[in-house]
Image (cartoon, rainbow, N blue to C red; front, side, top):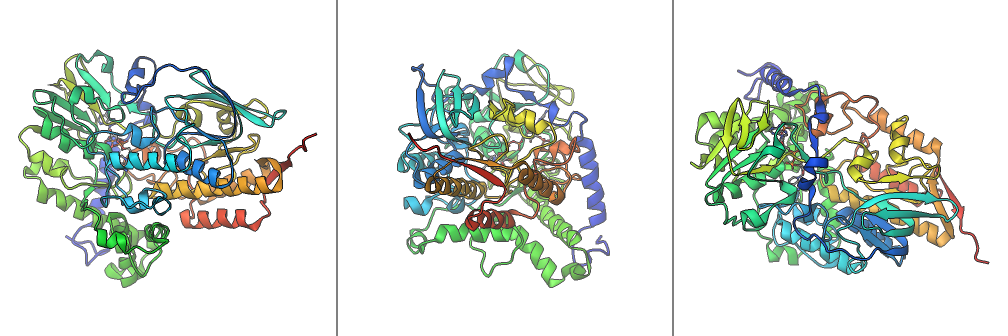
Length: 607
Ligand code: NDP
């Protein structure tokens, strides 16, 4: 029955709103993000590098122009742009055994980008590459990361299988000293931290994980020695194995079809279903790629971000699940469907969002044969409360005889025993447990980064930011930490296409360094006044009360601090006026030539 608020729509917004609130209430936990177990101490094995653990080597003692922490797309883009800016010795330190960051760690079966590869893979035009598919698979993406490293001279000097443990600034030397877990000591004029938002695996907050007698691993440390096969699937050692997957987020959605094909039996333990829309992958048409004009990637990235930001465009170049959803919202708004023109914009957005989620729920009914299983797989929350997923085989996997969905109705698994997984008071005996339980988000900067950053007065960044909140200028520079550049989204921007943010950040850093090189400047540092003003601007524009993407009325998840209000203001939020405005602001700032809000010191002339 349609509600008068949406006469043209085939659903009842009032009932849906109530259902969303009920589902959220079921999942709210007072321990919020503290529910999860850290992969340290007795769980440290879950973080071990299974792909390319490197042999011992002598410690390095070196002086470099710039040290970049992290060899994922962020570190590679920063490294590439710094090389373009004229720095000769740019050294990447990466804890993985190869360059690649998230695409090195996440080599699980079925791993694939879920943002169109033509906009997600950076530097395509610079390298003369067009991905082979609309959604490229992990091995191709990893190879592209390594190609960037080669092209920009970052491979040979990269320090792999090595974790930075601490760094401290010396005013006297005008440099950072960076220490690693292999005893290295680097002196660096500049440091860039590009550690990524999602790289420290976490485990569910349940008892007994260490008691399990079978094989267990986290998705970001896939054990191919045990399962057989590789990132493309073919897990040929699982034919007589009962497997449990815990978690049904974006990672599990990609893994489940492969496990189902290979395992004797697969149990999928679900706390909250993901919204799973159409994937529609296809090989790249050579006629299309041959006809691309110079500048095509930049324009495609811009067009996508404009549409996802709600700015109408003459053409939708990517036309995927992201742009069509936002496009539909704008269409409803413009056409006055559901009397939208008479309604507040937020209400129109909510209706369009509900309409999209209804479509996603209807897709489950079409694809899943058992009505009870279908019902359990339907997400009842607003789009963007959790990562939207796109997959054409996930839902149909639940039609297989060897697959059981164990829906926990929002409660999650209860414990792990020697023999398997307990949920709803029932023990499911399995031989293997795959933890698809995601990554730490919202824990302290240094805990996630894994190292302490000591500035001019010996204070760590965490100590500084614990005392009154995160303070940066544009998310990049922070007072007391000269020549340190932070690359990330906190106090910067949120973009659906994360590599766009990384590229913009890398260009920003390189432009500053170029200016310093040409002006004979030794150090740069944000002033306290400027970073206070920027932090206030971030908080003043943070609208959803969580500092994340999902709002306070969303079902809990890492997008909204697990549904808990923040202890204080959302200092770590991204810029609330949106990425377009953020990129415009930072570009104008660096191109003005005045560099307002920072202090530079000149280089001491050589005697
Ligand atoms: P998520 O944090 O998104 O998912 C973790 C899953 O574990 C959730 O389903 C969560 O349930 C579940 N969980 C946690 N505790 C329990 C418990 N006690 N019992 C049962 N289930 C539990 O991690 P992912 O690794 O799936 O994804 C992380 C991010 O990585 C994505 O959001 C995305 O940004 C990125 N990603 C990108 C991909 C790409 O192609 N570009 C592919 C895959 C991931 P609940 O929802 O109830 O908390």
